[in-house]
Image (cartoon, rainbow, N blue to C red; front, side, top):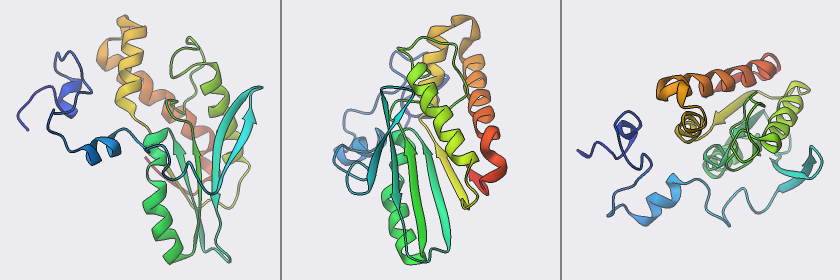
Length: 193
């Protein structure tokens, strides 16, 4: 608890590895921290692959309830998708449809001016544009839950453009996500970030 390079404070301290975990951290918690563990939902039942931007495959998972009272959509990277399992439990009891649009390691945003090797690259942007178009066309979405490992993307931006500094990189990432959400927000009911 007192280590300045573990947890959120590592983002503002001069730490060699801002994403380090304590050596004695329980394995189950580590698996939860990195997002969905391969083989867990939504990597299995109910997922569909869709071609986006030529050769790119994205995941769009749909779990529909007969006579659903609401539709809840999760959008983001694997850190958003990890909420599918608990949300599915709640949705079954309450009669909700659940959909997940996710791509691991990709920040859904409106950025398109960076190298392909980054989390903001061409295929990530093709996916982001596709998700925005899908949600814009919908009138049946009640709630959108957005999530991503923002600290990772801010660090990547700071490394790619050192002139931004850490604060500028965080602002840049948050602004690009805000513009992404604003592009489809009107037709999506409530948005929870």
